[in-house]
Amino acid sequence: MNSEEIKLDITEQISKTSKNLSAYWGTPSFKGILEEDLDLLKKVQNKVERYYNMQLVLSVILSGIFLVILLLNSLEIIHKDLNKAGLLILFIITSLLGFYRYYKIKVNLEFKIYLLELRNRIESK
Image (cartoon, rainbow, N blue to C red; front, side, top):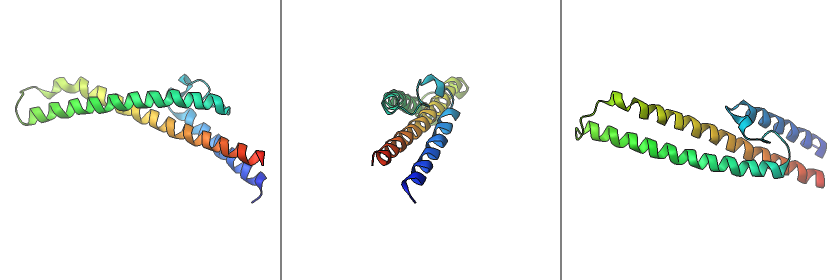
């Protein structure tokens, strides 16, 4: 394979990654995520990383609260009807879906940045 074929293959992978990024919910809220400017993408990556970490913390806290409530209820320490905990379950599911969304955006964005840097290195040689 010559360098032109490699660059073409990398460009195809970048377009597939951009298509994957545009498929996730709310991706347009991150301005510049579909661009090919490395500086802009690294700024967007920092923003996505912060949102990912916040969603991770929220998911862990809500899941922990739910597990404690289930444990206390199963040990009959508290006598609460778990139907009232439906709102907490809804928040946990929403939080986990948000965590998964930011995880997929984060991974695809890291892959896109890596491919762009690789293509730039090949072009500079």
